[in-house]
Image (cartoon, one colour):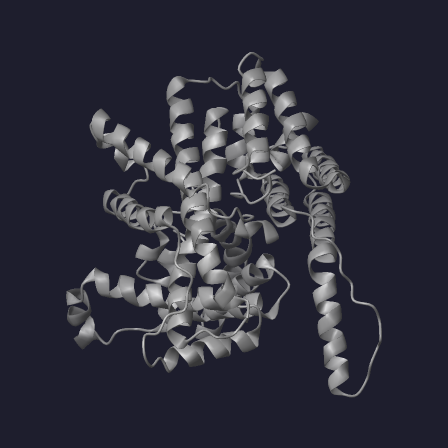
Length: 473
């Protein structure tokens, strides 16, 4: 059930109608049933996996809450985290590592001859697993007490707006909202509706509109020039940003309609001037999760070993490699994580000579924005490539661009109109340091914005509908 489908519109209408007449506890039960129905709509066979993960988390956190013994609490934590990671690894990485091991043996003339392990990847498993692990770790660290209600725990793990592609919400934020009575307001509904409109505009009009232009270039069909590959690389930055942030906008908007305030996942990421700033703007929920639960413990561990450049660099590299693996079982994702890890290390290690520091201050911020945008562009080329060899082919072709001969399919008229509007809105969000900058506008201007977005959305419905990119993770 895609957010950009008629079935979701019907589903959401029914849920909202029932939700608005129920009391708090009944609302939670309704949301839990709706979340499992929403997940089962994709593949009912994996509902048991989601329920099993929830039962494990509930029992282990409750067991941690019943004892003050640090060793016992740690054992329950390790059990929960170990099983959750084990299930994730089984479905997501077993086939990849088995095939890599078989390829390694083939280099030495050995052949196993086994059948490839092609397990179906349960949609959303990476997101709800990390969300569940975050809750377990927060209980173990004493940041919050385990919830007594199984319904509340299950709703936290499976809340349908976040279930398939996040954001990865923290237990310290979401569980109190689940436990407390929620007041539905017209303001909350309209704010949520605008986020839904904006998200669908990004997804349907821009991301889907660009897919027929970009996908043939990356599919390896051949016949495309270096100029085509360069253009496809730039357009892919826009496509994945609008696709993923569009999903997040819809998820946050739906949650807002239901009375929940969900974490922002994007904040004008391509205006970042450095790697560290980029990760405070792009996929914020995942990067902050990795920072709090992976990077900071590793940094503390290596700091105890001694203050050295190597000990300072290791946590960056390990954290980003893990983030690459989180995205998928492929060497391109590992290379993407390694690339970002090295960027973080280089930016943290490079020290400007004292004599040049005044010069650095005179360099306009736009220079650093453009510079790091192209650093990010290369990383997203690595991310999108279907193989390591394709990365080399693209970079080689782009480096030797001759004539600007293009063979790309032209996007639809609605997409061509939508792209400049989106870039202006994104720039205004950056300038105002707020995604709600439009609320400062007069009602007539806001109304014109809403009407324009809705009109372009209707025009863009002719674009071929595609699945959200991050569903594969």
